[in-house]
Image (cartoon, rainbow, N blue to C red):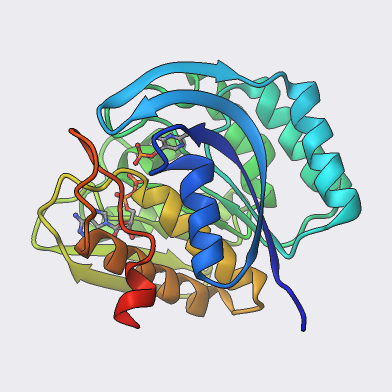
Length: 267
Ligand SMILES: Nc1ncnc2c1ncn2[C@@H]1O[C@H](COP(=O)(O)OP(=O)(O)O)[C@@H](O)[C@H]1O
Ligand SMILES: Cc1ncc(COP(=O)(O)O)c(N)n1
């Protein structure tokens, strides 16, 4: 039996809804062997981020070497990278180990408002990581910061942002629509040739902690198992829709999504 392997390079969310924990749960649900390289620890729950402890970049390099020289991986995703030192290290190691299928989730700010990427690191994301990405998955505010566009709200603006990020080197772009308004949530996949719309009903719930991480981890799982990008993104959209529509009701704030809903509902 061939075992597909996926690696997440991200921060730890002690509350278990986002970051490394969301990624590993998603990999497991989608039948992929999950591995993790920690970039930062957060003291976090559904009410917010109470502390951040960045891991020294030498130790991040050591974790990547350990995993990639022995086990290897079929796809990798990055989440919280925090500062430009960490980004330089990760970019260097991704290239050194010729890691295939890189999903770049350009996380900047937690839903509760805490910064997960320092301002000084935005340029490093654009210069060092974007050109390596098989797919980049910005939400609307992240797409605005990356492209410098003042506002991204309409379908035309989402298309323009996707074109810019593709021109800068990402092979595929998914502009996520969770932060838009209206009863339908639409994400837009651009592969450099056509725009593919992925839509779902908007669920009115406060339990959306970790949606972006979970969605990107599901794409990574699809790519790890050899699915083409469009199929991987379509499966990820079904996975995150199931996870949001069946909340667990955990914690006193923005609760996690339900990582096993996809299995139970047989989407
Ligand atoms: N309220 C919601 N109802 C249905 N789908 C949602 C909702 N919020 C986010 N999504 C979906 O979850 C995924 C993550 O989107 P988004 O919230 O924009 O990202 P992030 O978590 O990075 O801010 C996307 O596929 C988006 O369409
Ligand atoms: C360690 C870590 N990584 C990512 C997120 C983003 O998730 P969200 O945008 O849902 O807060 C987070 N809160 N914590």
